[in-house]
Image 1 (cartoon, rainbow, N blue to C red):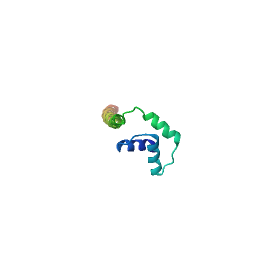
Image 2: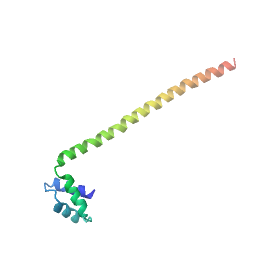
Image 3: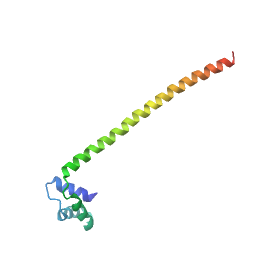
Image 4: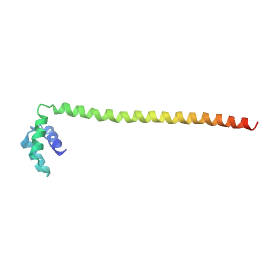
Length: 102
């Protein structure tokens, strides 16, 4: 993750995201620099609009957070339905027992 963070930091500082810059950021942070990972990062980011990628990434977690809330509400409805069904079966059972004793 520190490789991606270094690229984001450089982008936020309006600096060019290239191998030398990423290496400098990683070295300054005390991270061990892997030349192959730096090259892969820079190659992967070539031609990518970082601002657009960040905007898309910021929208995705909000949608993921909304989904569990909807599921929780749905679960709550099921619990209420079970309670109501249970109440009806208790009434029916009590009526049946009353018939046994006349």
